Amino acid sequence: MSSKRIAVIGGGLSGLSACYHLLKKKRDTGSETEIVLIEKDDRLGGKAWTIKEDGFLVEAGPDSFLTTKPFAIRMAEELGLKDRLIGSNPEGRTVYILWNGRLRAVPNAFLSFRPDWRSVLRSDLLSWRGKAAVFLAALKPIRIGGADVGVREFFYRLVGKEATDRIILPLLSAVYGPAEDEVSLRWTLPSLWARFATQEGRLMRSRGLPAGERSQLPLGSLFASFVGGIGELVNRLGAELEGTVRRVVDRATGIACHGGCYIVHLAAEGPVNADGLIVATGAEEAAGLVHSLSRRLASALRTLPHRPAITVSLAFRQDQLKGLPKGSGFLVAEDNDLAISGCSFSSQKFPHRALKGYHLLRCYISARRLPALMEAADEEIILAVGGALRRLFQIDRHPEKCWVFRWERAFPLYRVGHHQFLAEVEAAVRDHPGFAVAGNWLTGAGIPDCLAAGRDAAEKVWSDLSTHSLLERRTEGSQWA
Figure 1 (cartoon, rainbow, N blue to C red):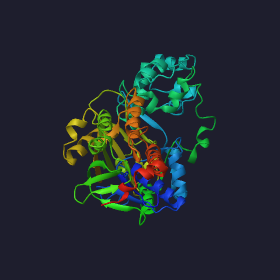
Figure 2 (cartoon, rainbow, N blue to C red):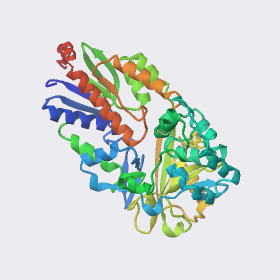
Figure 3 (tube, rainbow, N blue to C red):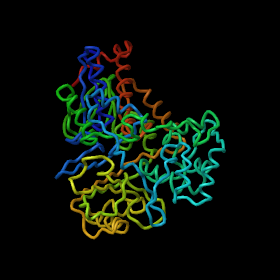
Figure 4 (cartoon, one colour):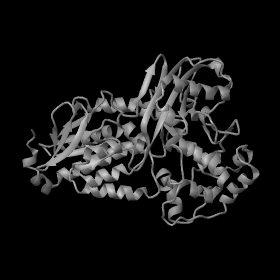
């Protein structure tokens, strides 16, 4: 590995993680391998983007990550960010569903998947028939025999249509966008799928969080972030790579392989030649890049659908939002003409997100309104969101500040049978030693999944290039232009 070069295309979390883990390999082995990061934007992090402006901390992309997936916490601790990790505000963890014109608290049983029957009985989200269906879930064993099933189909069988439509699907939409029939249970809720795949299971009796459940979680919370937002993780990774990883600020336009050497063509500069290559871009961009290298891989990547997203953050003075309930936010369950599908109470979910005396809210444009608003001016989007909030909270003034973010391919859609897509990708990648892919479109869309995907890609490429036969095969290809 002493005279090798590895290129990483994409400076999002997966690409940064790949570079970081390659750098660790380099240091651990004393190798002189050169690592090159190719990213078209000056800013690193991709959708992980924190903006600090006039006393407000605004997340353009993800604002937190699941603590039940420990890789992100372990990596943060390794990067020296342990003291910067924070859980969500204990006093603001109530989640609401907008149903029949009112915000109603989600029963704790549906947030922890444990038999908190009192929370179900007290809920005004479900009718008595709906509650009875949930109680029967504790007695109704279901086994799916290892098969992948749709989220909607599974929960209809388990807890009934009412609880699924009013609670389960809105909760999932906060992470994966609107959950339709074809969305995979195996890849959106893998731990829950595993409980039912190998043996008969019951939702509320399945092993969920134990007594004192939140105290057993890292930081005592299901969700975590950093004092300074997700951008702290991006900045620390960038600092780790500074001076040791070569940055190329340019757009990759294509990939070829010649004489055992990968060639990355760039829009402005000359090509970058490398012995190893990791593509850590979105699936659609990756398909365009690898077309000349592997039509099989490009074809597979183009089959993966994505959904767009628009998020709007708004700052209001607290006296403008006197009716805002304590909690982390709400999601919309009912079919209506609201412009938003949900709203996160950012300044209540995590501390120090807003100036003293202000609330910071983050709203998500509904799927129904997305096609029309993706090309609309920011002012039109803000008016639509403001109109929805006024109907709920009787706001009589415009927000003090607003931030609008558009993501054309925000959510990868894990359809039923996603494992077949992964198998096709893996088989295509296996045909090219020293090559790997990483991204939120593989096995998970969250921050821990992206970081782990980058690590796995780094380990695959490093292992390939460390193989004696491969080194011999690439001796001539290592003489870069």
